[in-house]
Structure formats: structure tokens, C-alpha cells
Image (cartoon, rainbow, N blue to C red):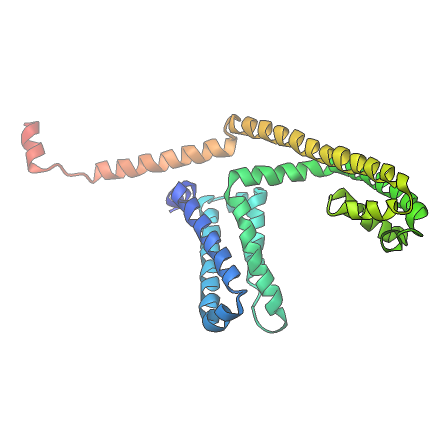
Amino acid sequence: MQAMLEKWVASPWFQHTITGVIIANAIVIGLDTSQTLYASYHDLFVQLNQLFLVVFIVEALCKLGALLPKPGRYFRDGWNIFDFSIIVVSLIPATGELATLARLARLLRVLRLVSSFPELRLIVATLIRSIPSMGHVLILMSIIFYVYGVAGYHLFHEADPTHWRTLGISLLSLFRIVTLEDWTDIMYAAMAVYPWAWVFFISFVVMGTFVVINLFIAVVLNNLDEAKAERLQELNLPPTKDEIMDELRSTQQALQRLQSQLEHYEPSDSERSAAR
């Protein structure tokens, strides 16, 4: 049974089936947001969501069974922990005060698409690796925002109180500028009183958007290359002692089954005649 489960879990059809179930679950969750469909097919949606949950529970049990006699290895993989946590949260009953929380928990199942594709797992792992390096870029960006926020308040709070009347509003205006969303409207409002105000805005766009944002991209790309290199090294690693012992155990069981079949094998009449 353990060998059969291990074969199932490693097979492409198993992975594709689970991915298809996750996509179908995501579609049902989206359809459930329609008031018309909700009124007509609410019971069907509930039953389908329960069916999807059962499939995910069976998947987790199959993966645990495939790792016998050491099922604890299932929790050594961070993605398995992620999938198992979503299953546990999805068990919240969708009744009473917990109904909204249960719906949000079902929505988390869509995130399992990330763990279903190796490429997406690599991207998420890269983002997590980039967090420490991004901290320094965030500090630099915070300094730039603070300096320009205070300067913008003192320079423009009288000419354009809508965007610069307090430090907090000034920082929000700078965030709008750094996203390049209609930032020229803020610049022209300031230039109507101070024609030289374009220097302030152009310098901030260059510093905040063209420099700092590209630093974020550079950090992510650098960590992506490192994550790819580590993944290639993992694929080339020699098997561990546990993996060798599991393989030897499986081979021994196969030999025992073959020996048992040979001991109970009885040749047919044609084989006896050919032997004579």
C-alpha cells in the first residue's frame, strides 16, 4: 500500500488532478459571489465546496501514507505545511458568526495553485529570500519620502493645502507621485504659484521611481538567480541515508514478493512437456 501511494503521489496525473480541483474550486468560489447564482445554486456550491475539501484531505492522507513508516517527513516541506494549514482552516464550520471566516478560509484554497507549480514556488521562495535585502531599500526609500514630505509641506502647504496640509497627507501625495498616477496634476497645482516647483517633483520622480523601484527589481532578480542555482544544486545532491534505506526496503519487499510467487508457481502441462 505504501509503495502504491508513493507511486500515485509522484505520478503526473495525480498532480494534474489536484491542480484541476484547485482551479474548479476557485471557479466555484467566484461564481458564489454572484447574487443571482447564489440564490439559485447556493446548496450546490456548498456541496461542491465540501467535495473539494474531501479531495484535499484525501490528498494529504495519500502524501502522509506515501511517507510511511515516517509520515513526519511530510511536515519537513514548507509547502506541505502550507497546504495542510489551509486544510485545517477550511474545517471551520460555515455557520453562525464564523460564516464569513469560513468563506475567507475557502478562498485560501486558491493560494494552493502556488504550491502546485514549481515555477510559482520558486518565485515565492525568491520573494521570501529578498525580504532581508528589501529592508535596506525600504529604509532608503523611507528616508527619501520623509525628506521630501517635510520639504513639500513647508513649500506647498499654503499653495495646495489639499495635497500638502499635513505631513501625513504629504506622504500620501508622494506615494501617489511615486506610482506615477496623475502626479502631474499635483505638480501643476504647485507650479501655478511657484513656477520652479517642477524641480521638486522631477527630482523626486527620478529618485523615488527610477532609482529606488529599480533597486527593488534588482534585489529580486539577484535572489532569483541564487534560488535557481540552489535548486540545481539540490537536484544534483546525492541521496540521503533515509532515501537509500527506503529504496533498499522497497527492493527487498519486491524480491520477497517475487520469491513467494516463485515458490507457489506450478508449471503447466505444456511447460512440463517442453522440459522433458
